[in-house]
Structure formats: structure tokens, C-alpha cells
Image (cartoon, rainbow, N blue to C red):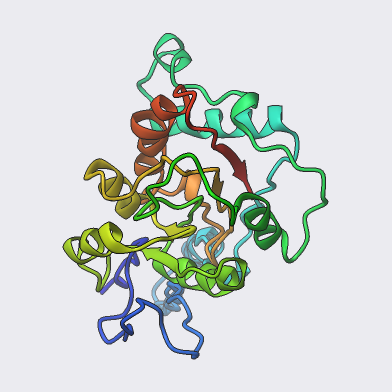
Length: 274
């Protein structure tokens, strides 16, 4: 039987969450599908040497064409460009890939432009995400006073496990709690109730849950200053902007919610791929 496919929001059924939607201190590892071993083919005594040679060639072909998974994969490393023009081009390239039937004319109104990109001078480091968040989180009074369910920083990443990792890193950035927005083990109705009463500076989530909360108007963008697209690669070398489970919802967030909101002069948020 083929191994069960792990979706972006999936966690184990016995995964425990506390009242703050955060796991315990134990590290959680993603399950990586291992390639099935190729069974040795027993040579029949009645076979001629030529047939046996052909059989060996077929067996070798199967063994060498199995695509390895996990850390041993030969897939190339995804490189995040640093310049605003290149970041916008990368986003638009993958957006078009996610909608193969879209024409250039239809795409023209949905493009991300260099002016949408947050420009930064510090070189990327191990604390790059935290440093970005610190520049966007303001402790002063904002003209957009409604803070319930209205983060200043929104981080979009590929899986629930990745959400939990980033939440731990970003907790010291703000005195307020960091919202965890993913589907597995957390009912959307509970999150909607929490967003209505919770003042928050930073939210981290998966594309599907973020899109639903934005559509329900539970997650608001009136205080948003920075949207971070986390381009971390998992053990299978997958990235959120190019995963079948995440990319359509990710680009819908841009096309249906954030792009129209960016035209509002009262809103001043920027994007950054990291």
C-alpha cells in the first residue's frame, strides 16, 4: 500500500495542542515517503543469456529512475532573489504556473509590481525573519485603531508544522501573542471567535486557512504593514509558491484580497519573499 500523502495542514491525529494553539517543547518531524525497494528478479534457468541480460537492464532502469525523496533528493535548491524587480518576477512566474490557462492579458491586471515589494538592505541571516518583523511591528498608536484580528505582520508558509516553528521564533518580537492559523485540530469557528476579541501584531498561517479567514472578514488587513512569503523548502524540496496543496490558495489571497486592498491609500503594506 502506498504511504499516506501529507497535506499542508496535516498533523498527526494524536498531536496535542494547548489553549494557545502551540505544541509542546518536543520537536515534531514531518513524515517523509521513502522509495520502495526494487525486488530482485530471480533468473530462470531456461532463459537464454540474451534474455537474462535484457532482464538485468530493465531491473537497473527501474532502480535508477525511482525519484529519491527526503533529504537525499536531487531537486535543486530554491533561491530567493534579493532585488525588488526579481522578487516580483519570481512571484509572477509561479502565479502564471499555478494558472496554466490564463492569458498574458488576463494576468496583466494581477501582476505583482516592484513597488509592492518591501525593500531591505541588511543581508539575510539566521534571524532575517525576526529582523523583518521587528521593522514592521509598531508599538505606537495607529490611525487604524481596530486591532482585533488585525495583524501588522502576516507570514504565509507551507504547513502547520512550519507555522509552529515560526511562531516560536517570532514570539519575542511582540508583547502580544502570535496567532497560529492552520486547519488541522483547530476549528475555523473557534479561530473566528478568537480573532474578534484578540489584539495581535503577528499572524502565521497556511494559505488555505488564511484565505478562509480573510473571506469571512475575521482576519483584517487594515493594520497590515508586511506580508512575508516563507519560501522555506521541506525535506522533499517543495516551496509554498510551487506546491499543489498551497499555491492556488496563496495566489488567491493576493488576487482576491491583498491586491485590491493595496489600492486603498489608507493601507500601506508590502510583500517580501524570504
